[in-house]
Length: 104
Length: 278
Image (cartoon, rainbow over all chains, first blue to last red; front, side, top):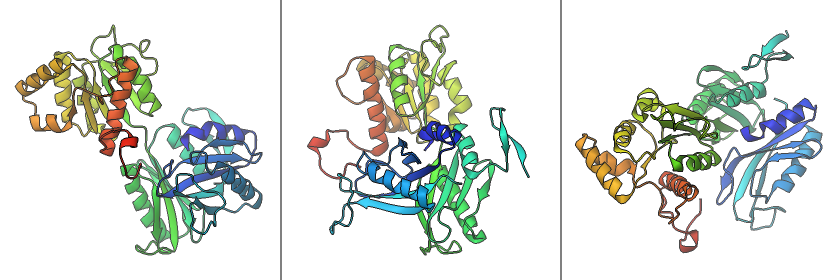
């Protein structure tokens, strides 16, 4: 999260609302460890990453939804036998993200 | 009540009604002060946070004083080990229950790499170590070589005998840190290696040809070094056997060995091995 402070500072100075998505847990193979962070501004600008590019697009959509509703949630992306997830990691792992507005 | 809030750089940055947890966290990580941030991610009060650090009172609440007490204790423990992860608790912090899920994230200062010897290979190793996120110190007793101008990417350039630097700072080194001895001059190497073996540094390597290395081992024994410790901990000649020659290639061979030493891998190509990658 430290590496995206510059972008967050810039967005805050411009009065933009920000959602923060953090990897909190991974199962199996996964490119980024817990703590990997991505920030999304209310106009869709992005800083940082939470995977090798597999789920970032879906995270942006979740983050923008969270900015419009104001809630916070745990989101899981990964491989599933019943194809419940539209978005997965090509490496076959599962990643759990906590996404919330930067209102704290 | 509003109060004037002064940042650590002593620049007035505005009137605020108490700094938020985010602002306190930001101040700490910017100043490289170790802190851990605990966030409720499941159960009541999702998003509630507590920030803990070494020389500060915990800030914030998860909504229950007993839960707060247990999470503060666990966050301090995770921070000491530099770990991040999810822990589950009962509503009042009970163990072996899962009403509340808390993500504890440690923000530890970057690991240190001490490079002894301001030689040809040093500049390349500084650059590669910076890519990996180390805070890099170059140390050499010869002030004409140990200059910030020669190593602009180093966080710190110290003119002193390496073993004296370790006498001052060695007790702060831990398993995440590394010492690379590049002087290949026995009068610097031998006391530096003996001093390094007295620290808890995670990686210790020393550069030199096979012949230099044999001679260095002899001198270490003559100087009374614990030769069991030398065999266990000293990586010499330094680096993986990648066959490179240039300073940059050598630097990659050194940091690759540091990673392999930490993970306990034998550093073969993945193509020739099986099993989980991480």
